[in-house]
Length: 281
Image 1 (cartoon, rainbow, N blue to C red):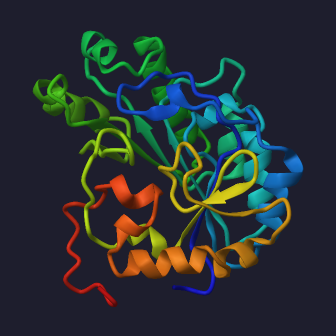
Image 2 (cartoon, rainbow, N blue to C red):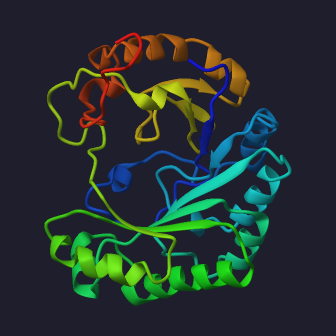
């Protein structure tokens, strides 16, 4: 394990305006809806100067949190830091795209499951399809006007309902974005799996995750706090990263013993990953 994480994910909010068929968000009952300012600032303050890639989102839509430009600006006080986002493109009506870009986004991935409005509605993401497309194109145009170096990817999940639109999707979005891609759907832990996939987890090496209440969890796919490893309210980032139970969990995962960890015991992520050169496995 590296001495400090390379990626830190901060769930500034648990609010989401989509209803994706594959996401457990609709079943979540935890809070608070918005992470307190003192909490996200503490996480950032305790990880400055280490070349961290921050992801100010987790199981939510980040651009419904109107504080995001402020969060980005606070992160970018550290010249070694970078900022990434995933978004469904369904921004809060008052979200300030220009301010977010001006603050300094390095990479953003927009997920739009459908080339046509009909298919998009079937995907269950929710929201006004035409408005979302307009939002994403508007974001890219604002990026271009500002000569921002923000890398924009637009992607669609490979589903039965989207498969016949994939080429049209790629052709359309390649005109606007830096990348237009088709991605595979993954299964969230505890979303129907009944057997254990015995394998290590690449996430254990360099990633750290904070829920909106300040608790740190083992994985960004931990929707229900099954793998809590610490709490930023009474620990430091470094104490959580290097302390127990984080160390013990990581030792087990390094050996592929997912079955010994409650959260991971029903996770089949990275089924296609080549673990042949994984040390310790």
